[in-house]
Every structure is written in C-alpha cells, then in structure tokens.
Image 1 (cartoon, rainbow, N blue to C red):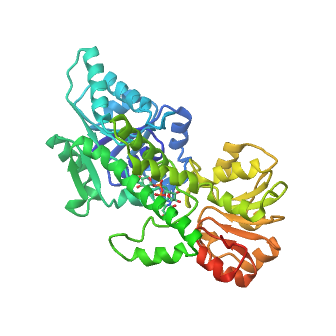
Image 2 (cartoon, helix red, strand yellow; image 1 turned 45 degrees about the horizontal axis):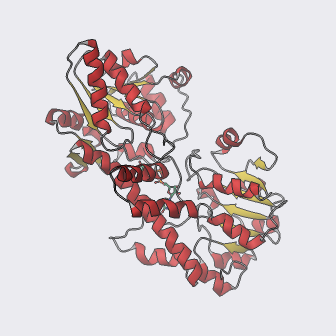
Image 3 (spheres, protein in one colour; image 1 turned 90 degrees about the vertical axis):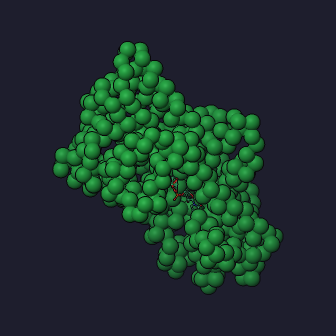
Length: 453
Ligand code: UDX
C-alpha cells in the first residue's frame, strides 16, 4: 500500500521504516530540510538498535522515501499517518498545535479519498478535532473529498522500538468505519500473528487505551517505589519483596522494579495529560495525581541518600555518575532522573564525572560546558578521583563491575545504587559501603553505613 508519514521523529521514523520493511511504499515527510537530507544519506540522528541499517536498506530498495514536500506526500498516499510531537503545555495537557497543523496541510492539498491515521499520543477527542480541521479546509476550498480519521496509538518502547513494531503484542484501531478498519487490517496484516492481537474499537476508546496503558505501567512503578520507601523504613529488602510477588501472574514480573523514578518522553507526560483530561471533566484523579507525586519524590531519593551519608559536606566532593539516559539502550534524556540528581548535586557544590555509553553528546547539548561536569570515556575513567559512585541507569555493562577495581578507585568511598544492580552482601565483602533503593533489611543485617533509621 502507499503510505505517507508526517513526522520523522522517533515514532514516525520507526513506523515508516517498519512498514517499508514489509513491502509498503512509504514516504516520510518532515519540515526540517536538514533532517530530510540526512535521512536520504542514511543518517539517523536518534539512537535506536537496528533502526539505522533498516532505514538504509529500505531507502536503497526504493520503498522508503524522504521529503519536505507535503504536497508530494499527500498525493502519494492511500493512508496518511500523523506522527508529530505532542509536547506538554505549561498545565500538563498535550499541545496539539503540530498535529492540527498537519491536519490543516492535509485539508489544503488532499485530492483523492484517503485514510488519516492519528499515531501521535493525543488526548481523547483529538480525532474529532483532526476531522473538523481537515473538513474546514476542504470546505474553504469548496471541494468534497471522502476521508476518515482513525486512531492507531503506538506502544513502542525506546531501545526496543523496531522489535515492538515488527512483533506487536496488540494493534489498536479506533474507528466506526468498517471500510477503514479493513484497510488498516490489510496494512498491518504482515505484523498480526493472531486475530485477537488486532483490536478494533471506537475512536475515543482507542485514544484512551494509549493513556490507560502508560498510566497503568507508571502506576506499577510508583507503587513499587512506595513499597521501597516503606521497606527502607521498616528494615525489609524490597528486592526480596519483588521476588516474592512477581511470580503471581496477576501481578507479573514486569514494571515492578523500584529505582530512581520513571522518566522518558511518555510516562511523565502521559500521566500528567490523562490527569489533566480528568480534571477538565470535573473529576479528581486521585490515583494518577499520586502516581506522579510519588515519582517526583522518587527522583530526589538518591540525592537524599547521598545527603544522609555526607550531611552538609557535599561542597567540593566528586561523584562518579554511571548513566545519564532515562533508561538503557537509548541516548534520550527527556525527563531523565539523572537531570534532577545533577542539579541537586551541583546546587550542593559537588562535582560530577559522568559516563553513559550513548547519552554523552545529549548531556553536552543540554548542559553545555561547565566546570562541575566532566563527561568521561568509560565507567572506570569516571571513577578517577571520585569520592563515591552513583548508578542511575542500568546499562548492561554496569551490572558486573570489577569490585576490586572499584574499591581501589573509591578508597573509603560509597556506592549509591539507584537501580539495585548489586548484591549488598557482595559489596560488604569487597569493603564498599552500599546504599540501594528500599534495601533496609540487608543494610540493617550488615550494619553497614547504609542503615536507615
Ligand atoms: C513507555 C512504554 O513502555 C511504551 O509502551 C510506550 O509506547 C512509551 O512509553 P519508554 O518510555 O520507552 O516506553 O520506556 P520504558 O521501558 O517503558 O521505561 C519507562 C521508564 O520507567 C524508565 O525511566 C524506566 O527506567 C522506568 N522503569 C521501568 C522503572 O523504574 N521500573 C520498571 O520496573 C520499569
């Protein structure tokens, strides 16, 4: 099928590339000419495993095209995806200006009947707005062209997005139009392994499904972070508790890892936007508000542990920081817990030597040159002259460090483990003081400096 995709950001580029991979004729359109030129040369600016070679292969095979010309893209397509950003407004609601600008453009240049698909994460009711915007433009031109607006939310995880697209656990299609849902079924046929994975529903339910999925996952994380806080206080180890509950299939093993708080481009923004929608409808979404409040607090927890250990003597201390990205396998630092931690350390007068396998240039872009931040080439380089190590992103290469080397680099130093990667007993043996998240019991038993009263 002939498909055009507006927006070559994360979602648009993955969608376009994977649709081309199964044989569709795809045109990706973006207003950023430099980005389009780069993509034509096979340059992919985002870090996503497997994406760049797939972009190049499909571009070379002539199935994936890049352009900044919306007219050409609209003329090409039987199906047009809107996959542009919906950044948060000041009040937390999703800013629809880019989505509606694309809708206006479609209305201005549409010549043939088409299907318009909302892929961007948008509040309930947005498909109606997109429909009205396109209809207004067509009316202004005095033409009558048949089109339908379908909601098709994405569930891609950064770092595993290509895999998620190629092997989705479900495809959600929101439309009341049978012809439209059949067309979407044909488009997605190569990805659907069983019937129940392709779920057709009304537009508003599809829009709400996206928010419900992310809010549910964020709730699991905040819940576990709250249990971790309790564990710390009562002298229990949340890692034991996690192992004790995960095997119950009603709870499950996923998204019950306590840590430094969730970040990224989706959870923080989507939980806020859903809460905002509820407020706008006169509701008080107590649970969603709490999920966000717990996460905001959690992002400060590592610093609280650091302060608890060092008191008011942080000025002049140097901290090695392992990880900057909001999670492994990405260079994305949007809403990353590392950002809050860095601000807090700097405000207290501390120096930071940070290492992240992918996010150093992003950190450089965000923070620029500053005396209290050194971006290092390796995790061991970051330890040089450091008083303590803080681990904030669970990159695989941080999981089994050489503790002997850590011990000699840190001297009497401490490890603050924001992702509970290490075994407190092993560290005790290596003679390194250890703080994890919610690990009251092991600390109490060992009597290490990490004991939390
Ligand atoms: C998420 C959803 O998983 C995806 O379906 C949706 O389309 C977009 O939002 P993403 O933001 O890429 O994907 O990352 P994800 O792997 O879900 O992690 C989000 C955050 O939660 C990260 O900061 C991660 O560190 C944190 N997290 C995750 C935890 O703290 N504990 C967990 O148990 C799981």
